Image (cartoon, rainbow over all chains, first blue to last red; front, side, top):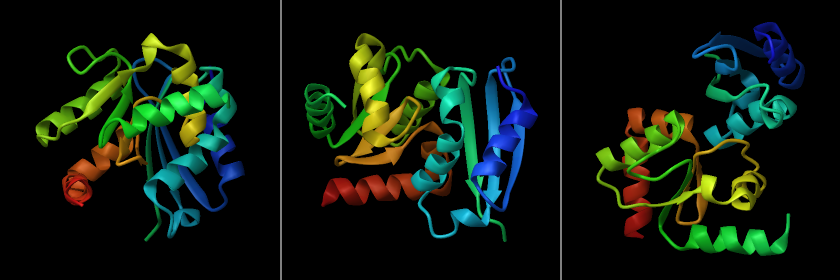
Length: 76
Length: 107
């Protein structure tokens, strides 16, 4: 299990200029994560999500995060 | 990744213009995210094939490496990775999904 603040830290450490919102549903290992970052400018949605997934790679592989609903946006 | 598994995945992806790797089947999805994708494609009236990753551990893990995407479901359109549940929902809501699939299937 990971805490919300750990998730936020992992993402903000790996994706500069990002703002992260984490909510849980169906218990603490199901996460709804929203990431807003200028790093996403010009990237496809697939590439944007891949950036976030790679920041959480270990936690997803170990199933510390069992389910992740993800939304990525660029600031404007 | 093991070449044999990669070839098997490639064959599955090439076997249908719209291919979904999911948990469970079209009629009995075993996960809410997989169910989302099935419902979306059904509601657009799109023909698609599915592969149940719960039936094959090597494919289940291999497909994640293949696309550099750590979660299931995964949707492929004409061999290209289109996205998982979140991206499909977003494209569906914006109307982009129907348009993109129709254009790809017509070409």
